[in-house]
Amino acid sequence: MSTDQANRAMTAEERKVIIASSAGTVFEWYDFYLFGSLAAIIGAKFFSQFNETTRTIFALLAFAAGFLVRPFGALVFGRLGDMLGRKWTFLVTILIMGASTFIVGILPTSDEIGILAPIILIALRMLQGLALGGEYGGAATYVAEHAPQGRRGFYTSWIQTTATAGLFMSLLVILFTQQALGREAFADWGWRIPFIVSIFLLGISLWIRMQLNESPAFAKMKAEGTHSKAPITEAFFVWKNGKVALFALLGLTAGQAVVWYSGQFYALFFLGSVLKVDAYTANLLVAWSLLFGTGFFVVFGWLSDKIGRKPIILGGCLIAALTYFPLFNWMASTANPSLYEAQQRVAVVVAADPATCSFQFNPTGTSSFTTSCDIAKAALARASVRYTNESLAAGAPTVVRVGETAVASGATFGAQLTAALTAAGYPAASNPSVAKMESPFDIFRGQIATLILILFILVLYVTMVYGPIAAALVELFPTRIRYTSMSLPYHIGNGWFGGLLPATAFAMNASSGDPFYGLWYPIAIAVGTFVIGTIFIPETKDRDIFAEENNR
Image 1 (cartoon, one colour):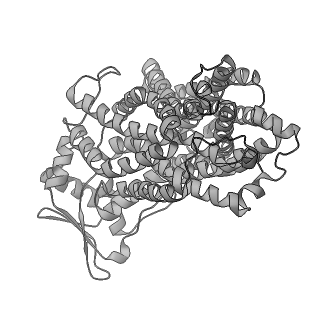
Image 2 (cartoon, rainbow, N blue to C red):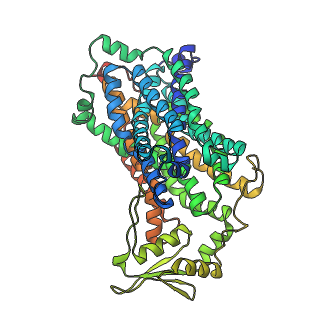
Image 3 (cartoon, helix red, strand yellow):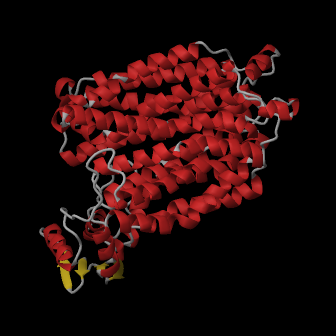
């Protein structure tokens, strides 16, 4: 690598490549996040024939379908990208994603067309997941193959800002649409607006991408007839390539995924579901932390060109694993001091027959937990109560002891439990100590500013692990199978290891009785990735990705 090449200014063509790839991916993530943010409203509109609980379950199941099919999208579009080209493949992915999202915005509800509405909705979600599975690998590969040697980390890091920017954009559009229309009108028909406006974003993305040329590396390889004729077989069923994909999953993307999901999605879940911060405030807190932190994706991408990909990605995994417990405890004591104090002070015990207590892992929301022990633990977990477990003899009824008060399972269990917890010192729903923002710019009060600082630190970890990941994955694989090889470990890591984090953490919390116990899930995976990555992942920052030996 020459110093002049590494330090030269970015050309106009390179800027266009980065803008086109990044802008399109921002819009795709925007589309994808809309559904998750509006799941409750969508459940009411498209599953109205069911009761309220079942509606939400089906809406979450439809959302989960988009995550579950992402690795299959990586295989389908990765194969096309390695056989037909990078440019046309990710033109197709954005067209599918954007069109699917727009159709959700105009799709008749189940009140209008009956069972066809949810069937079409789930089909659209699966198309979105497939498209997203192909988008990232195409954009990352396309940018990396245009980047000069020694600057791939910096160039590809712009793509890494897109998931955060897409989430940020979707939150803003939803919040401002709600404010403009009012909550009632938004729930009635205004929820369609964020989906419908995506057609303009799609048009811009397609127009920009149509101006691009094919990746020079792929064009040269295809002209020479050396591109892969069977990229899936070559990538995963030839051991020398397959083992690299396996190590990329376990030694890079699994840890990157759980740190990313912990810092953005689980932090939002934790604020709302565990700490009882209202959705408006929680969304704004996360939005501000993303606004302050997003630039660091590029900073760490640039730094990885100087000191390497491994120190930053694996260092981020390790630092996150070591500091999650103090950071989330700090968040809890700041966001809801009364609840945190009660968790430390009030002794709560669940006494039950262990055979009636399940591990309440429910990633799609379709499982049912009906034993007295499961009902008691789920109620306590939803109320963010810290409790211990006590084993009783087989067949014994479940009893929850709150201090000196015993609450037995039965028809009035919920009301009795709430009364006992409130009497013991757990705050009521009107708790005045919980963080609350009155406007989007109410960020200077001590409680709010502290929470934004904590969330910013969590986002900083995200930028460490995510900023250099595209460059690291691109450099691990030869050009002829790069699109396929990097896409699958990326989407298994992020779609499954990361996507299952909230459901797994909730099940761990409910099982253990500790609202913070679920943090062991991302910690364990992050530490595992640190160890495996340190041993098995080579440093790749100085690799020539066009060298002949890397393309055989």
